[in-house]
Image 1 (cartoon, one colour):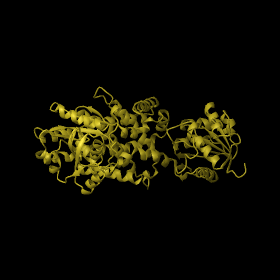
Image 2 (tube, chains in turn orange, red):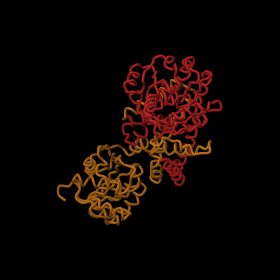
Image 3 (cartoon, chains in turn orange, green):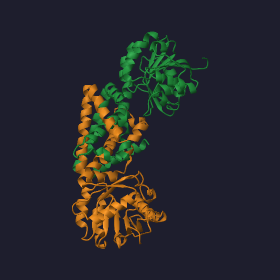
Image 4 (cartoon, helix red, strand yellow):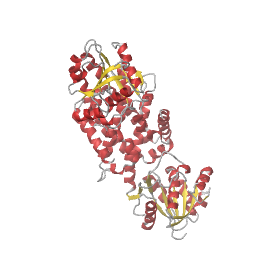
Length: 288
Length: 288
């Protein structure tokens, strides 16, 4: 395994996120061996066939034996149970990291379960597609994307550097920030828009003034705008619950502005309406 | 002009909407001559060069002289003044139609100004792109799209048939409904989503808990979702004011569902959250 920065990598959850990381790290020559683990045997067989992993183990404890780095890519709410299970099998000096989209709850629940001598680095690659499973994985998923890591005062500097180097090796920019800030930023730019889209589709689809579903009239614009309302309900239930505090804060923030706009429309306040729309356009155009 | 369904068509406002109609009707052999009219000479020259119009007049009264059909493609709030101006110059039996995105206010304001012997058909082609001006026009804009016409008991059946045939000639499906229903449907599938997107961008861009603009962290998903918040502020100010009643009704409808979702998140109600997201996904997937 000489020359590789990581000798053995174990990926638990070989789907879009975990699979793409394995594939990209192999292509980059950053890892020696990639071991896969997950609930579905057909998915693991597919991962093997696609060259994402070199071998797999069904049992998480066996899968992490001798691993230098373990990447947890299963849903956020499964992480604590998973770490509880693999903890006794992790080798001394192993690095544990994850890709969960909420970080405060992960740190709170997982950190106490990590054995002495094992280093936990909480992370979140801001990347994804609408697809899932090993078949959806591709080696360029993380190129030009950001990966947020949320170290704290207990974090091992050497382990943080290895995980940072790993994400940079697959083409990502690594940003470190407190978990609390991560959760607010993600609530604002990702979780809130999903809540808004889900509410919008439900509101329009439930409007019953006419004897027909007025969603039937929706044109391309509405379909594009509400694409994210087709996301996996279970995943979003978990995100809404694990990032509850930050999400409710952002939903309140949204309502302040929506209420203001409604009031301006009700009053027919031309100047304020123009200002509201213009300010939004300028903010939006600045992030193009 | 034999063989053409419309001898002379005058388009007032030769931009994306008016220009594309002129171009498509010429390609379809539906019109003999297309006369353009508008405020900007460079735009009219471009329209001439692009073959959208055969000639132009800067003066609206001159432009409509001898026209069999006049298509008004200027902003909704300009229509009443425009019709007041051209009314004396319209020939007996001429048909007047528009493409404005709100219909109730147009019917209320324009109908009383239409001279006896001239037939007004209010319409709204549900098509568009982010671009504007004659240069943005293209002949296939209306293909496979819907055009809503909002006749009432005073509407001339012959004129309605000509305007319907015109929209069908450019590839659109023509749907007739009361203006009030049109305005509610559009408020739901177009105006409300714009209000939501504008509010979302303002809310996130104004969040000031950290010493930086957290919009900077937005990834592709947020950018796609908020694309419509880059739309023209003046146009949306006008739409918000002219479709005030229906839009406020839909904004209230949205808030009912957004509040319900917030309450479910606050309570951590797993079952209701899953149900809410699933229902939205099913409604959304049904309009794919």
